[in-house]
Length: 500
Ligand code: ADQ
Image (tube, rainbow, N blue to C red; front, side, top):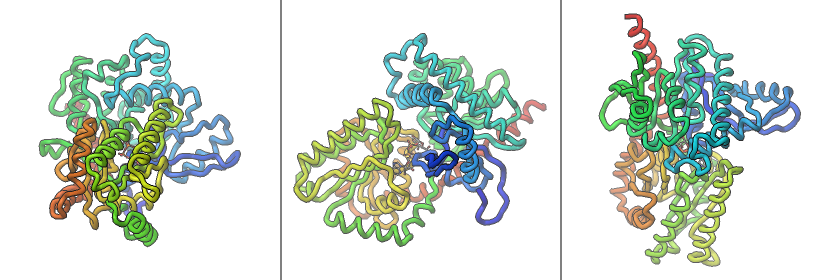
């Protein structure tokens, strides 16, 4: 939390997210070890350096006893983290149930689970009740640590009920909310039984942020169609109270509203200079010498389109026999939500397809696909990005997708090609440099693999420069600073309006 350059922090920032940026593992009755966790939100917020930041969230473990809770609170305090303790039942209903089984698939256009389609089903109602209860528990912890002048920044679909809980307690609190997933078309959102309550609660925030203009537009339409509140050029205004709605990426050069999310690109560029990483790069180059390297790095989630990606690679091998022993696909998939049956099914499906393709096109000495079900450490990941010729990001829907940014940041030497789904928010920032594809169209993705592998050095250079410029200019730090400064301005303007 300390600034390395000794300058004072600008402001205190309370970041509230479902998960803390670390996972806790219990080593004894009162001892814990903490490990940084993989994920887009963590990556983005690690770049935030201007604020005295406290992170409030769940540590990902059930700690029923007081001794354990005290010890964990102390260990987390050293990392400027504050835990919210959720018991197993709440986690089951709120996190596995309402967040991951209802909101996550719905916001990614996968619909509601069949058995929950009716608002009257008991499971839906109890899950929503648990969601509200959990959000109130987060609010209680925020209230306990809040100091006047702090900015409270709530994150993601897990905490849509939080802005209202916070404002009910203290209407002067500066509250912002940012959604990391897509916000779906209002026609999709309106299928959600708790649609109005969630929208109203989000509107209690002073500033609401989305990755792209489309998501912001969908949100405003949902407010109009479901709540009957008209949008204004600034956001949504209800009975004289304005909630400003803004998006990271706008088509128009409307600077007031821009805060593009990004990564800490220098962290990646600097990592490539570390001797251990250079050694690893050398080893990988030797290991795959004579073959082009294609790379996929994803959480193992249905929205990431991993089976579609692998099937497209199979089609490419089928149609391009001359490439069969000259290319390798490395797919690194970190398992998530492993206790959910759909995710277990996805893992088996991916293993089955990879096995079939390796059996079909492999030889005694080489296989076309290396699939790893695990998280890689930061340095290993950077080395992989650096040796990659073609990165494949084929999300079926993705709020933004920061893997595409990380790949570009590590490609100054190689100038590899990015194949990117048009359904990832990143298509709007990196689209001009990437080859955009519809991930559902296996034939099109297979053709884009051929295009990428055969691309001239000049074209690769041109495309890379476009993307590299964006990734190094629009960093995570800039994103956070702009969001918080927009939030401060919004609150000041609101105060001026009411005092008139
Ligand atoms: P995620 O769905 O987690 O984030 P993404 O933006 O791609 O998706 O970020 C994934 C992060 O996890 C990256 O930093 C990546 O390096 C890391 N990661 C993934 N697989 C890994 C592996 N096998 N080993 C190590 N690290 C791995 C959500 C939304 C996104 C949005 C972000 C930020 O779903 O659309 O871009 O939040 O807003």
